Structure formats: C-alpha cells, structure tokens
Amino acid sequence: MNYHWDWSILLQAPYFGWLVSGIQWTLAVSAASWAVALAVGLSVGAAGNVPWRPARLLARVYVEVFRNVPPLVQLFLWFFVFPEVVPNAFGLWIKRDMPLPEFSTAALAIGLFAGARVAEQVRAGVDTVSTRLLPAALATGLRPLQAYRLVLLPIALRIILGPLTSEFLITVKMSSISLTIGVMELTAESRHIENYTFHGFEAYAVATAVYLILGLAITAAMHGLDRRMRAVEAA
Amino acid sequence: MQFDWNIIVSSAGFLANGLALSALLVAVGTAGGLLLGGGLALMRLSSRRILSAPAAAYVTVMRAVPLVLVLFWFYFLMPLAIGRPIGALSSALTAFVLFEAAFYCEIIRAGIESVSPGQTMAAAATGLRWGQILRMVILPQALTAMVPLLLNQIIILFQDTSLVYVVALRDFMTTASVVADRYGRPIEMYTSVAVVYFIICFIGSSLAGRSKAPVFR
Image (cartoon, rainbow over all chains, first blue to last red; front, side, top):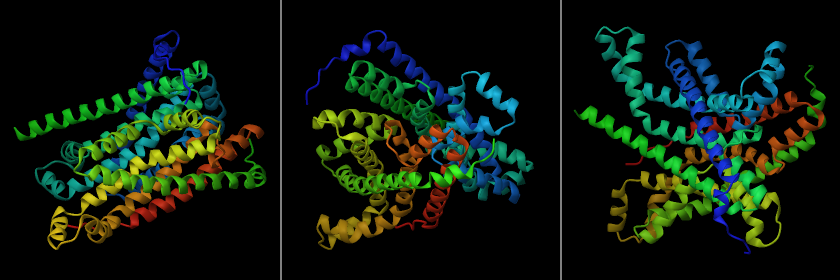
C-alpha cells in the first residue's frame, strides 16, 4: 500500500472549514429530524393507544408504510415527487420559496421515518404500563385523557428511554442520507475533501471519529439522565 | 402531469436487473455477515479480554458510523489495499459484509445470552465440553430466540442496499433513479419502487412479527 499521509491537511483552509460546517449540518439535520420524529412518534403512538378502532388502524397504517419503505426512497419521494403532485401553487412555493429546501426536506423525511419507529416504541411502552396503571389512575378520579397525559405517558417514556436513545442514534446516522439531495453534512464534506485532496484516509477517519464521539456522548448523556431519574425515583 | 404507465413497463427489465443486484447484496451481506458476526459474537463472549476487547471495539465503531460513510470508506480503501481498481460492486459487497457483521454479532450474542447461565453450568456438570455445550445446549435454544431479530435485520439490510446509490452501483433504487433522470419521470419511477419495496418489506416484517421468540429460563 503506497499512501502519502498528511493529517495536517485537515487543519488547512478551506478543508478545516468544510469539516466544521459538515459537523454543524449533521447536528442541525439530526436535531430537526429528531424533533419531527418525537412530535410524530408521540401523536401516532398515542393514536395507537386510543380505544377506538379507526384511530388505531390509521396509526398502524402510518407505522407500516413509513417503516417498510427505505428511507432513501422516502427522501426522494418528498424531494422529487411531492412538489409535483400537490396543487400547483404549493408545489411552486416548495420549489421556489421554501427556505433551505434541501435541509427542510431532509429533516422532514428522516423525521417522518424515525417517527414511525418512535411511535411503535411509545405505543408498546404505554401498552405495557396501562394494564395495571390505567384502572388505578381512573380510580383516583382522573379522566382518561388526564390519566394518559399525567400517568401512563410519563411512566412509559421513562421505561422506553433506552430504545428511544437507540432511535436517536439511528436518526443521527440517518442524517447522512441527506447528502443525496445536496445537504453538505459531515459524510458529504469528508467525501468532498477526499475528492479535492486525495487524502481520503484522513478525511474519512476524522468523520468516523466524530460520529463515534457523537454516539458515545449521546449514550453517556442518556445514561446520566437515567441515573438522575433513578435517584429521583428512589428518593 | 399524466401518470405514465408505459415508462414503468418499458423499463421493467432494467429495474428487474436492479432488483437482482439488491438481492445479491442482501444475500452476500447476510451470509458473510452471519459468518463473521458469529465469530465476533464468540469472541465477545470469551472471558479472555484479548479476544473480547477487539470484538467489542469493532462492533462499537461499526454501529456508530452511518452506512453511507462505510460505503465511501471501502470504495476508497479497496483499490488502495489491493493496488488496482476493483469496481463499486466488490467494495460495496465487502462494506455490507463487514458492516452487517457488527449487527449480526449483537443479535447472536443476545440470543446466546438469552439462554440462562444455569443451563451452561448444568451442562458442564454433566461433563460436556465448551464446544459441545454450545452446539448441543445453547445454540438450539438461542437460534429460536434469534429468528425474529435476524429476519428484522435482513429487512433493514434490504432497505439499506438502496444506499449503494451513493457509489453509483445500479441496485433497484438506483436503476429507478437512472430512468427517472433520463426520461424526466420521477413520479412514476419513485412511486413504483416505493410500492415494490413496501410490499417486500411488509411481507417480511409480518413474517418476522409472527415468529415470536419463546423465552428460555
């Protein structure tokens, strides 16, 4: 193997700036899609717990559709197909005036996909606790919605903290597919540096390290949160 | 804009080739990943740190990075390591085997650990050796526990094969995008591949859901 090493390339302009901006975009896409995923996951998950068949069925359909189509295909559907099939004025707005079109589409598409997975966790979590806690909560005089909001959901979320952490980690990694529609996030920038300098090894190594650190940091943060909650519960 | 069925019909053969490539990626990724993942799982379960630590590190790193980055890594590394261009397919196959191995390793490990340690001790007390215990006591039960998770992982792998788009390898998704670009028909192409992916993955996940794992204690 004949390779000329030069780690200093990563600190030179403009490559250092590319890396930093790549990390920023990765963080932005991850955070925005996670916000969408939580909003969707909590609502669709709740709909999956409603004692009314049509609502549960709709939630089921959402989860199955968004879970069983590859995220990249979903991203392309939102980016290339959606603006063409909506009413003309709206389609034009998306293509011409929507702020940060690539970023917004990526955050939405990844968020809706992750939302289906979060919804499954929420529904399963609430199902587990409701058998015993729902009658108890209702017996204290809470109305069903209050029981759900004040008792079932908080306890279920506490239980599914671990799986939710995994889903968040998956979402962070998933943010890399946004490069296919032109978001210059971390993976895209490392490729960008490889193309310009032929120092692929250094560029990909630093991207790998950043993803690893990001993942370990998120896991550590969640462990910390878990410990704090345990301490509160024990008190 | 009229939905044009003809473009789907006329590109069906091209798309079928793409689907065949996706199937090849799934088959090689699963077979190679299971083999390597099984070895990694045994290493991770070893009481010797010199075996368990490298396996654990490998799994942690592979599971922390996006598949797109792994595909780029091997697309770049393979020709360098071998000394001549080898093409996107070989590098993607290698990437899938090495990437999936980390995930299969965790599934196999969890399956083996789901069998209560009391059984290992009991088996050891009857005079079985480690290899025999693994083969005759643990694996038969562990495999049953693993089946639903393995099926799920294969479905995820099938969905992930679409990411070879980034190295311009012509799988199902990429062939669709080639046709969509060439004839300006994104609506027809992306909708139809989405439907096909959905049908295959939906059937797969229904099967996975039905094979509920029994609990051994």
